[in-house]
Image 1 (cartoon, rainbow, N blue to C red):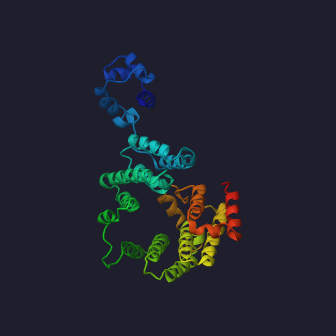
Image 2 (tube, helix red, strand yellow; image 1 turned 30 degrees about the horizontal axis):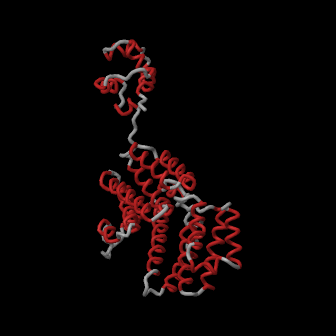
Image 3 (cartoon, rainbow, N blue to C red; image 1 turned 60 degrees about the vertical axis):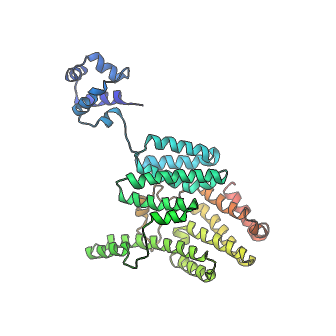
Length: 367
């Protein structure tokens, strides 16, 4: 809805002029100005530039149009979608996303986070056809961000997220074509940036930058190691031992519990497939105990005594600050359903301590 009447009234009062004085400048009657301000009529479109110039504002501001949402408005919309998705369903939520994107088609930050939302929640699709439809839509809006946005960081993030969409769509070759090559053995950009900061002698600022870079590279390294462990000819036990060493060394249970939960589920699945139910059960118990403990601490990403300067960076660079991109309930449901829907886990989760822990998780999360 146009807010031009409200704007004219507000700006006229700020200038301290009467309706007659504005009417004289615009070469219209006082009655016309009065009707504009009460919303009974709008100024002729040819008068808008003159009005905007008089009040020293843009035409967009005059008519109350803002092509962009603020980060806080995007955050509020994201959280609202998250709170409604389990009751409303993904189809209904996607309709709301499409309406919002049509309204703010040039707000590239909104487009990026709506694609992120879809990627994080597409598993709620009623079938594979729907899931593919959601991912294709996310891929298309990310493509627009990559092409049209003037923000290099947002373009880079969107490119990575678009590659994730393509991989989920079963198009790994297409994902590789859009991603920059990483085959060259050269000094990484992070190391060059860190080196430049070191030369500034601003130690506190340098330490913050280094902490962020180390944290990002650790999480990337764990992800890569988990991918390596999925190869058929990999000695996945040794690879997993290295992941566990990193988790312990860098206290990842405290600073990023979600990546540890993913690792435990992956490891339990490998041991089940290897028919080693004892070790599979061990990691299922670890996973469930972490979920129980997370009820008080939540699944937030946070710093610790070593990473004592990353919290501000998390607040500045993550839409939901330190909160995960899915609600706590959805995270818990994901892990329980991942085990319940895997026939190989049936013997482990139906008896003994594991069953007790699952019942406890359901009780404390009211599932």
